[in-house]
Amino acid sequence: MGEGASTTTGEGRTRRREVSMADVAEAAGVSGQTVSRVANDRSNVDPDTRARVLEAMNRLGYRPNSAARALRSGRFHSIGVIMFSLSSYGNTRTLDAVASVAAAEGYSLTLITVASATQSDVSGAFVRLREHAVDGVVILIETHRIDESELALPSGLPVVVVDSNAAYAYPIVDNDQAQGARLATEHLLDLGHETVWHVSGPRESYAAERRIVAWRDALEARGARVPEVAVGDWTAESGHRIGAWLAADAEVTAVFAANDQMALGVIRALHEAGRAVPADVSVVGFDDMPESGNYWPPLTTVRQHFARVGEAAIRALLSEIDGERAQQLTLVPTELVLRESTAARG
Image (tube, rainbow, N blue to C red):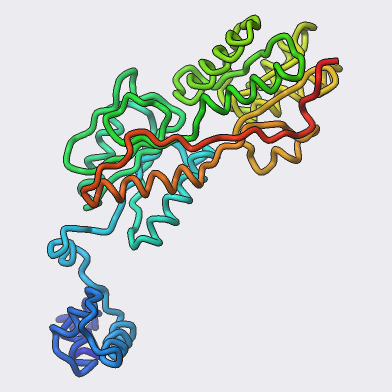
């Protein structure tokens, strides 16, 4: 019955049934035990026999039973990912790296997005992933707090969090937010600017909070005045709105925006107000998006290595799955990319 792998219903219709290991054994002329060895990638199979079995599997469309394999090995070879946004540049770049490394290690991904960063939403997503039979979970928080408290999840699965908050009781991987903000601020001070104005991300963002603290610390370490923080929402529109306010203040000669999109809005507002960048005002962004080198002027910015973060996160999770203790906090270094949007104070 191996070649047909079909049954006939009472109404005379033919319905294809699932191909079994016995079907493959019959088609390849081997025992079911040999098919099992090949399906589980055991080494004790003659190469010619293995090739014959694999050919029969492909021809019949045989799919190994992953649940049965998991019962034998204790692994589902599946990883869950919880994300708050697929529109975020950092999230998508990080997810891409997580998926690539997971695939190279023989793991599939189950992705769940949640509408809000509440404890209940994240816990609910975690429970749903357990129902999907995953071996571990990566949580891509990046831009949101979980309520105002430490993230707490049901026990029983390894978890790695991609975020800059060191309060979680799980291994954490992130770009070094504080280092990047410090590099940006010190660069502008080194150019002779008396102080640096900061356009931050939203208050509920851990990444934004880390950048604000590092910006303030860098100013205080140099004895510079600390201006009021202008709070944006990561969009170029918010940067443009804040930029119009900054452009009206003649004392503003240096601006550090917490991401490249807001920096773009700030630059537009400065141009509209007749203040040249960088002759009158220097501007630094954060992220180094692919478009940043094509802003006018090309944007000096802080480069985050999202691919390295994704790879480090999945490596840490695989270590946890293997029963090894992963490093509690991994910070991937950032770097300042110098372009034409900054210059010495005139």
